[in-house]
Amino acid sequence: MATTFESPRPAQQMEIVGAPGPADPAPLGLAGFALTTFLLSVHNAGWTRGTGLAWLGYAFAYGGAAQLLAGMWEFRNRNVFGATAFSTYGGFWIGLGLWVLLGAPHATSTAMADNDLGWILLAFFIFNTYMLLWSMFVSQAVLGVFFTLEITELLLFIGNFATTTNLVKAGGIVGVVTAAVAWYTSAAGVVNGMAGRHVLYVGKPLSLRTAKS
Image (cartoon, rainbow, N blue to C red):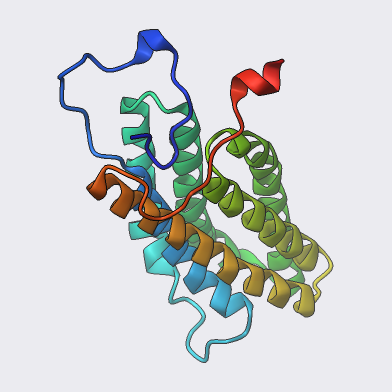
C-alpha cells in the first residue's frame, strides 16, 4: 500500500518486483515533528510553568535528527515530497535550536529576538505555502498537517514582528492542533503499514493527472 507521504511515482522508478524495500519512514518523521511542535506550542500558548526550553533538546534529537533521517530515507524511497518536507523541517528544528543557543544571547532586547524569529518563521511560511499546495496530491491527512501548520506559522511570524503576545499565544494553540493532526497521521501510517490496509482514515489525494487536465 502507499506510504504516508508517498505521491505517485513514474513507472520507471518502481522498485524491482520481489526486492524488499525499506520500511516507511514517514510515521517517524511525523512523530518527531509532532512532539517537538507540541512542546514548543504549549510554551507559546502560555500553558507551561517551566523554563520554556523543554522543547530544545528534542529540537536537536527528535524533531531535528530523527526527522532529518526520515527525510534521507524518503530519498531512498524516491519520494520527493516526503524527502523535501522531512529534511526541511528537520533542518528547521536544528536551526531553531542553534539560534536559541548561539543567536538569541546576542539580542539586546526582546524586540530584537522577536524580529529574528519573525524573519525565520516568514521564511518557513513561504516554504510551507507551496508544500501545502502540493500536499493535496498526497492525502487529506497530510493536507491537514500542512494547512494547520500554515496557520500556525502565519500567526507566529505576524505576532513576533508586531510583538503581540496574543497572536503568539494563538499561534501556540493552533500549533497544538497541528501537532495533534501530525500525530494522527503518524499513527495512521504505523497501523496502516502494519495491517497492509487502511485501518485509520487518511483520505484520498487529488490526482496529478486530474490537476494537469
